[in-house]
Image (cartoon, one colour):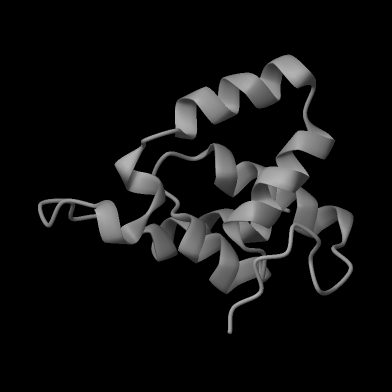
Length: 95
């Protein structure tokens, strides 16, 4: 059974938190990719963003993410040809 707790099961390093925030802001990186790379579920990403961002930035991010089909693989159109895993691989070393 997947862990949907808003608290990550392991302690995140500052680099992990930075990577979560960076990938969460990217339109093309799905929450599933964040979970695969960092081990953080969507509710945990939301909790991290709420904690780390200013209230106005968090509200802006939530408004932007709400209903965005690219943030969930299952909602994506088959015409989307990019692979969000490659984007996440490209971004990860910058942490």
